[in-house]
Image (cartoon, rainbow, N blue to C red; front, side):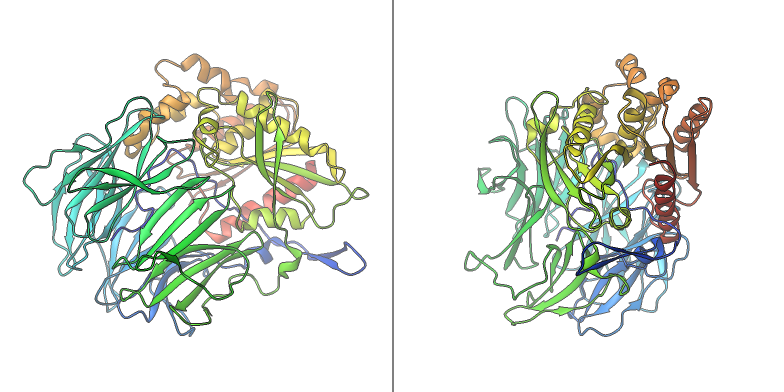
Length: 635
């Protein structure tokens, strides 16, 4: 059985939530009926972040990771609603639970070192002792999935060659292992069928073209079989195998703007449509024995999920649920119990359990700080505007409750990571903190964002810092048409690629009063020549989109803010993790120094124990407090 999303390799730079120190709680009257409470930074980060939903062998508990102690650890959450039990007690490194063992309460989990992304795979034994199953220096490993007979699990590791992930089968009994596929071509490992026979590989031919291959792991012939011959530029990806191991469900955009699900029959080598929607199909997977199918659709920056009973072909009827998106759906081995999360803009993910066919669910977590009234938080609205060339650009707009035509709000445009990421609906403490304190947030999904079709996605290829930046500028112009926004007080912020766009906006335009750069690229030549070696499988695709530093150096120099820092006139805050393997600390160090030479206000927050995205709650608090303090001073 595949552990979903573990092997999704992407050039997307993730923008993590970031946090801050306490300040006094205040109240502001927004109407005669309601007094808005403005919460401190610490209030927002008393919220608990949770993830993971693996049910154990007897369906009595769920494996969950949470940051209640300030750092992520693995927990056992009983389905009867009783108190959770901590399974790990890390105080330094972030731990994420992956899965229970299928026949007992051992667990697999991963952890890196201070955010360096060099994850190892660990087992926690029944007596609480732990063992590193992938020991060694400078390697990265991940769990791929379990074999359906419960005798083995699969792990990918780049210990042999930092550029390539090989596949190993580990014994569930004694953890002995065998190499089942040596990945000499440095392709992406996608899925292993539950019977352990078939491996799917993805070859990135370019950023618009790819192929899928199958390898028979049980035969002596380990040659890769191409299953997606085609003409022209078509992208393919793997969703999952059917539970009998006889069919592969895969993604393709060969038949329109959006990814559709198609089915490949391994026996007769035929392809046929499986599922399609008016948006991208994000994922398809099954319960262990195939009774239930879960399908996710990326519907206008929000996940729409369909659960189907495959024995009847009909949707599963669920009892009334709180408002929000379903996430992280998993089933017990006997398929009688389901667990899932519900998340919304105003409510962080909460875990629920449901006995199939019952009339009620049981809520297992209360993650929002009980001192915060959800009615004081803000749900986003999808807004669209015309850019410089008439292109319609979407975004998520958060309007502070205390704003009006008489009390105009300062605003920040938030740019996602990527470059091919997407700002999506869902709870983000950083966003709610700023909105609660009176700042409008417009999360613009500029051209090049995923989720809006392949044409939109590729409109910024080798035009970064140009056409996509103009989308952000026109997003600002849209904000200026709103009577409740202060047209003279609009800034820009973002993380990773969004941090680059922030610095590009501050360097190459005079549109933004302030900028908050969260581990953003400022020197494209350095970044593209120092990418982690484990990105080899999609390096060509990344270069096709961004440009090859060997041949596009002149353009990279032209769009890199570091080399044009004399143009920066307005205040900037830069936040960076010292262990970041994607955007190196030196990028931010040099950017800060260059801005200081201009005698322009620049503030710098550096975390010695973080990487690309801040995982530790204390650091999230420090960062979010810095954002608010900076905006209060300069915007």
